[in-house]
Image (tube, rainbow, N blue to C red):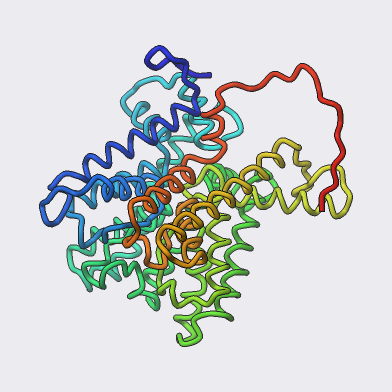
Length: 444
């Protein structure tokens, strides 16, 4: 299903990609204006493009400190781009259309279904309204929870800081406006022991990252977990495991010089923020090699499908683990929560993981070769970019034009989605009228 643009038939996947690119270009133009910078000067196109891409793709990697370089207008533009990127361009457009009284066409409903990773078109407009209401309530609640910590320290500026960080956390963006107060690129490192900041941000990241359909299940069925969709059960189980187990590892392996409370908060936050928020309460360079490796894995995994998070998604990893278990136990099909997983889903999951790994490794190789940096350091940045995380070891602002271009491409790929880009590039399904003879090949 699609429509004609400039006389050419365009699929819904291609419309989503074009819409994402259009918002990035519009954001780039606005950020280039003198009114967007504190100095009142024009911003170079490469700096503006990188920032706009990072905001729309809710990544958080920056080449200019958000609080120090950008004016209030520039920060507001960045925040709007984050909100659009977090909820999705199609979702925002549909919400505005329904508010203005316009009817949603079948094509728009189909695009909404793809954007939200919904299982059916029916009820998709109602789901869109629900998503926007949840987002508004969550972001305002997060801002109110952080106000008692920000107001005494920063006065009226604390209101903007609470709102900015709440939206950024819920959308899993990782942008912060702390640089003017606590030093350039400092993120939330000054609040590592402040539960009033760490816990609300942690909660917002998790809520934004578990997915829109999971919210729908929780609203409808509350604590009746048996009535949840199988996908929601997988997401909630995977999320719990990916928070608790890494938090334990970080607590035992890192932050040994912290007090007990600060160490527990730092370990919890470090387990949550790589999937895929990008805030940090400790300097990433202080992590041990094992801690960095764990962070890279979490960045690549990401959050749930149809959420504000990026990465290959928790469901992808769950499907691959279920398939591995089926192979080991010699079952015909993988299973999750007493439900069979079809072969096409396993193929998609395998393709996703392969693409993310290949692009992250290839990007790290290009940056390492071009900048003369260690491959491990570059892999941290590329995993952060393709996972739309935003955590950094501090090299992003110093990178050359080619390396920035690599990160921009990875951020766009990570937010648009591997399969969306592939389906947009291949606009038709190849008809299968015959099968090739079966060939046998050994693996493993």
